[in-house]
Image 1 (cartoon, rainbow, N blue to C red):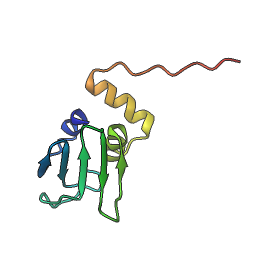
Image 2: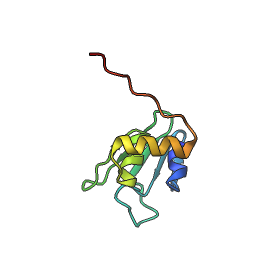
Image 3: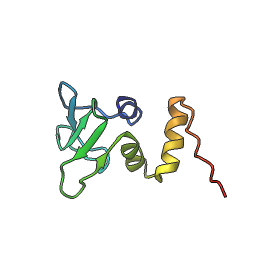
Image 4: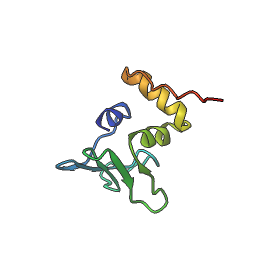
Length: 94
């Protein structure tokens, strides 16, 4: 999660242990002091508490939502940017 936040150049406004709060990168909040976006880096989960946004999920969901990419495309791009070999999909048997 921290690597994805770094790639997105997101900065928290507050931190308490593994909980980070700040402006939401999903709905591109312009208020830098906003705390509507919450990230638990230990559990690799995020959530925006703004009613009009409500985005939530894991680090892949976050990257896909912020970049506007489909999930599979976001997964491949994220792996590429982080230097990780993308997982191979299992082949179907007839």
